[in-house]
Length: 257
Image (tube, rainbow, N blue to C red; front, side, top):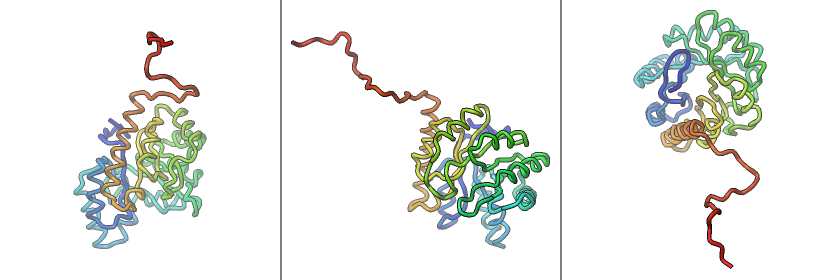
C-alpha cells in the first residue's frame, strides 16, 4: 500500500490523461493499467468549452483520485495561480507542481519551483513537485513543505528511461523515508520495473502509454511492470558479483578418474 499525504493508494502507478487517440481509449487504458491516480491539466479542462466539460465528466466516471498539474507554467505566479484555479475546478488540494525553466528539455526551474512550493504549501496544498535529482533542491523542497518528491529520470516525453543511475540511487538513498515518484522520461515497461527495483515508491507516466501503437495493451504492461519491480525490491534481489557462483552444490559430488 502506498500512502501519499495521508491517503492510501492500492496502485503505485500514476497515469496521465493527454495525447490519447480517443477518450474511449484513454478510459480503457486507465482501467487496464490498474492506476489509482490520474493527472489532469487545468489548461485542457478550461480550453475546450463543452469538450472540457465532457472530459472532466469522463475522468469523474473513473472514480479515481485526481492529481491536477500546472503543466506549461513558466513562472512562479503562473504556477501558483493555475494551482489555485485547479483546486476550485477539481475540488482537491493535491497539485503536481511544474515550473518549466528550459524549453528544449522541459527541465524545471528549480529556483521558481522551491518558491512556488513554499507558497502553495502555506496555502494548504499537498504539493507534488516535478524536480530534478539534485539533492540540494530536494532538501529545499522538503523544507518548503513538500512531503513527496517527483524526480525525473529523463526529459519529458523522451522515452529514454533512467539516464543517470548514480543520481537516482543517490536521491533514493539520501531520502529513505520520503515517497519518491519517478516522473518523466520512462519509455518502456522495463524502465518502470528498473526504477521500482531501485526502491522508488511509484512512477508517473503518460506519453509512453498514450502514444503507443496499442495504448490499452501498453497500459496493462506498465501496470504489471510496476508491480513486478516493487515485489522484486521488497523480496530482496541478488547483488551482482564478479565471479561465477555454481547453482548446483559441488561438495559431496562423485569424483570420476
